Length: 350
Figure 1 (cartoon, helix red, strand yellow):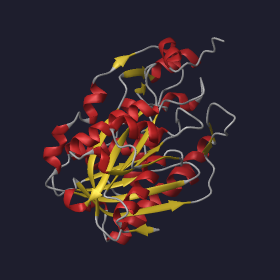
Figure 2 (tube, one colour; figure 1 turned 45 degrees about the vertical axis):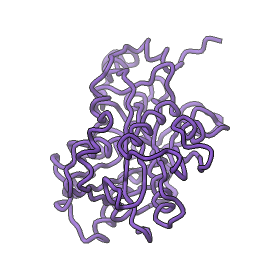
Figure 3 (cartoon, helix red, strand yellow; figure 1 turned 135 degrees about the vertical axis):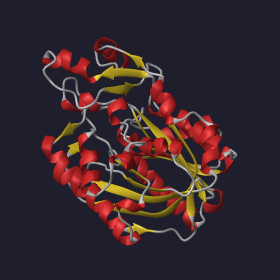
């Protein structure tokens, strides 16, 4: 379904966060296969002992507020999309809302749709702002590194994400020209409430999972907007690994120059709900005024959200108001597998 709000909506603030620790893919291979497995990513971001989805969301939200320059008490909703909320029963949204000073007169809630939980929150935020129910909505996609020890997911399961403050178009850094959602009941990745680590259907995850949703969502968006790949300055797709998004974008006619700024998976891993969104934040860090961006997320279960964005004259000045995404990526601290096990509490001590 293609959506256009009654009132124009824009991203009025954005911010990312990536933890500093990095685990090389070769280190995982060394431990589990004596170095005989080629890792799909160079390294992945790992949260520290004092970091989780809530704390990382607060950091990203503060960066978004710094760029928007608004009073947090004007935010009508604080929504956090994630696969790794710190509590099974207690919202992450209230923690973030309290920390940034948005309480008590605000909505707060958590969103769930695998890796597109964050873009689900953005879709809902566009609806609230576009209908006039809210002046500002804060939507966040954030996750910690999840993966069963030795499983293929462990090589790519990174940590980090981004926050987006949605508001009226006349205050915007990037206008939301259209959004689109495309879903089906396709099971390629799942985790039951009673289990600790997610499971996946291996090659089924590619097709009909990822490619069966990301590609048609992008095609439908471009058909509705009357555009082709050449009309976009930047493109960002969900990044479970380097192969999937580059293949999908190339098949659709996009070039490496168009996806270069937002393709981060080899440097920080798949940040799940933050994957495409942190790619978008990296693009907004370098985009110029008047540039067009296509974003397509993906969540197992399965579905995609697509967004056609147009940057404004206000973006270049806002880029300097908070740390850029690549500033976080650059402040890396390499760790080995033993340190990773400790940081992620993978070894039972009681």
